[in-house]
Image (cartoon, rainbow, N blue to C red; front, top):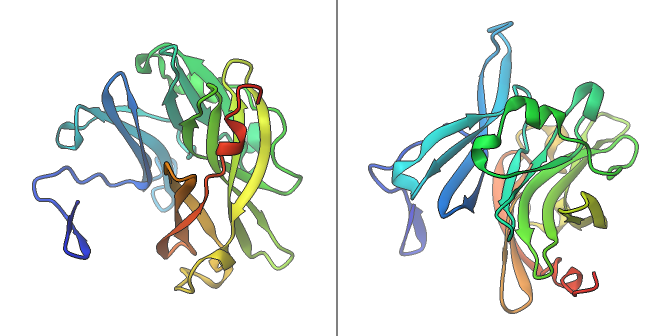
Length: 246
């Protein structure tokens, strides 16, 4: 899209990716764009299945699909490290991850990605309280080599309504341990009133992306109540973790 006056306008002749919860990164100079593909389940076409798909290209115009993640897994994220290795965050569910926990591994190159590797990635040390679930949305390489992770945390209340919060944590990619545990940085009350997809989704903030500014602030982009998108400028949540001793 391009900015035209006070609005964003869709560019012609650009690929249209049928993806939800999109994300991007760069690896070896290539643009990597990913998102969640939703499709009829092979086991039961009346039901839906989903997986994370990754596209690669020199730019948006020449993106090509290069990887399809495990069926049923969202929140798969990649980030290239200074060594050239690639940090991989996963989000298994079920017997391994319950409603959703974060796994981690490193690979040498994107061609090393396989469904088996992702499914086998070890979980990070405990990071959600009992009854909570969540996942990673975006990784930021900090000045000290650690990874700042924009995340989300969710839970149900006693009536079955869902509550989602924007959060961050910091991990050491070499030891696969937490430098800083999960910390909530935004909730629904921090944003403007707006529509909700369903009554049980009113209190939902889903992290989309974070742009760090030189001023010490950051622009946080989020999905709201499964029906809206908003931006809020906050204090950069990662600055305090960038000291050499952190």
